[in-house]
Image (cartoon, rainbow over all chains, first blue to last red; front, side, top):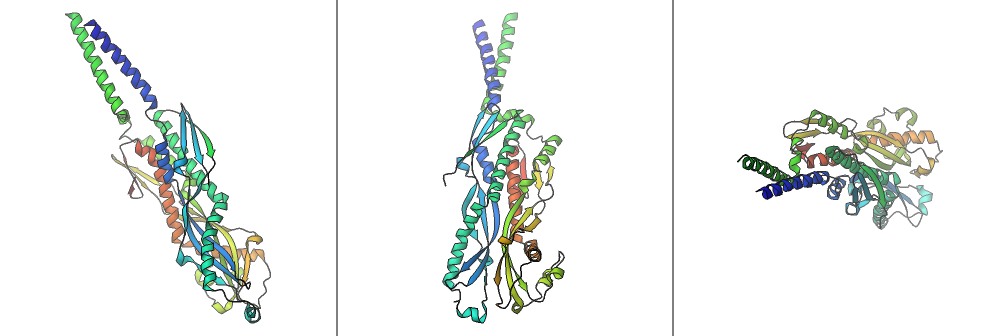
Length: 189
Length: 214
């Protein structure tokens, strides 16, 4: 009887130890939650742009168009390491997600009017020129967004703020004060 | 006999502890019952604090475009800050002189904090409508190009006047641009969803953000 009693008391203590250890690890920042919140951090931007097209004779045309571009970070590349209260977040640079979408009805074309004498030496801009220009506009849109450091940085900051908020909320729930260290991963693209 | 009863009491108490501990291991979130279902006034205040991360609730858009300058308009006078669309459209196509291209930026988003209402089972977050908060044209002559629409017209560069014309054009174009406002609204909703996600995952409350359940 004494033996059973001792075993039960030992089990009881063992369980309490297991649970008190478990309490520390039950809720802590995890990669699945971070990926979930980062998906929502994607920034959809409105982009209005103007490109100049010139045909072989030097006649100029401006094409004004609008598009939508999604900027964000590749959630599959994000990783975290939690070491007690230190959280290291491995984060890639923001990039364009998918292809920019040009809204076709928004395309507006303005052609230079060289006047009678000027016009003698300049051929009108053909349909082919315009089709080429629209395709150029598409490429141009992607390039100009990629080169726009401010837009890309805004998307990156947005993702970082949201991750930071997530970690600090988990900290508040568990009574921990996490320190975040950011490690930037170089994008393969 | 006394020892026997003592042993039974200890054993039963220990077994109860073990059973409770096992339940706690199998259902770890049960520990949060105390917090779950009770988003207190303090939590409401902290929720409101979380939602005031303003930079997440605005977007900056690039708006590069052009404006046509017409003959016979005193742009200094008519294209003041109060100029209406009708004043801008009073001219006909034959009066077109030249066009100026410009590089502009528009900031749109929410300038008020979302409102939070909490009842027994749900947290409701209402998001105010997005607005155009700011727009400006980059005052750099290198980014402003000209396209002549009448051969006889020779443009004398006047940066201040051109900038005024471009700024007013940008302002009138973005004022009622529903696409920009819709995107600004959607981005703000997504940011708020992301900010509320950890709370939602660790409470029994339902989160309803701008009418959508998270």
